[in-house]
Amino acid sequence: MLDFDGLVFGPVYDVFGQPAVLATDAGLFDLVVIDHTRGITVDEGGMVGVQTIRPAADIRRSALNALGISKKTLLDAQLTFGGASWLIKTVLENGDELRLVLMASDADDADDLPVYLLTEFGQRRLTEAGELRILE
Image 1: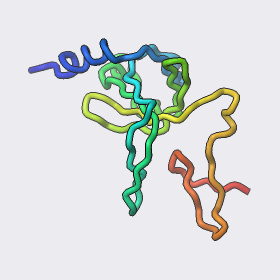
Image 2 (image 1 turned 135 degrees about the vertical axis):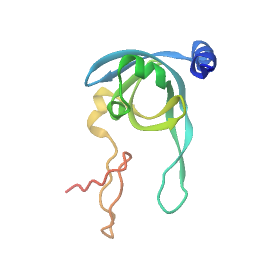
Image 3 (image 1 turned 60 degrees about the vertical axis):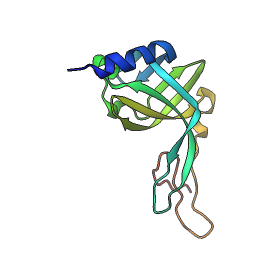
C-alpha cells in the first residue's frame, strides 16, 4: 500500500512548510503548516451561495495524530507562525490535510473580536464564528 501522506505531503511540507506553534488547553505544540494567510475562498453557507476570502493554513492530519491532538481541540486555539498569531475559527476536512480557517489574533485587541448587534429591524446577526450573540 502506498503511503500517500509520506510520498506527497512530506516533500510538499519540507519545501513550502513553515514552522508554527499551536497553543491549546493541552499545551504548546511545534508543527509545520502551509501558509494561506493571503486568503482562500470559503463558502459562508445559508440559503444563498455567498463566498468570502479568509486567511487559512493547512496542516497534515498525520502530524496532529502523532501529537495526540484531536480536531475538536483546534477550535479557538492559537496558531503562531510567520511572525503573526491567529485564532483557529473553523476546521475543514481535506483528505490527509486539515484546512484551518483563521482570524487575526492580537493580545491587546482580544476584547475587540467582531460581534454583531441586532439589526434595526430586530433581526439577529451572526458572529464570524457563526454563533448567535445578542448584546444589550
